[in-house]
Image 1 (cartoon, rainbow, N blue to C red):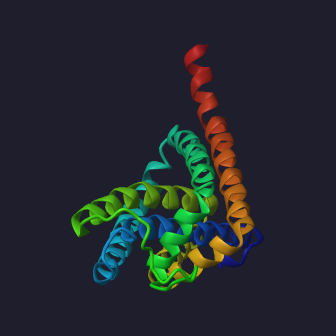
Image 2 (image 1 turned 90 degrees about the horizontal axis):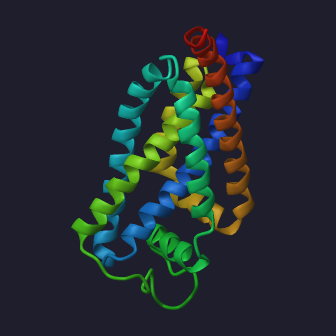
Length: 219
């Protein structure tokens, strides 16, 4: 099977690293939005976030695979992924206090022993939190699918595994991953470097793909 080739296994390792980092990143965004809610509403908001992310990832994956086959869109996708890297770099510089609030909301536990669970975040309604989460999920689901599709390249089984893993991590292990990234920030930076590599590779392959067409138009 193609999945056992060296190229496929390399792509699969990249996809797993991307999924781990982006699942934790997505979880922290959801946690930040849910942190401003009363304790009894946080679980509802987090569930809305996970369900929305699942549906969006499946939808974006179905469209993205077809779009990247169009000449020029691989290059555009690579450029967009470079912007994602910049955005992720800025998010990694989120204050320690904000991250702690998000992680407390996700795990529903008092991690800093101040006798409050995400008690310092500005209060909001469930509707406000849900809207904030869904808007963030649109952007982050597209980021995830683009990165996974770029890393998987032409290995369709790897793309499917990446999508399934992404959804599973969001639903089952997001809180654990968010805690892990909160304690060990270097893991997130390694993931960022992998996504940057995928973005640069997409830009290069897209430019090689587009160049003959540009050359024909010029000549």
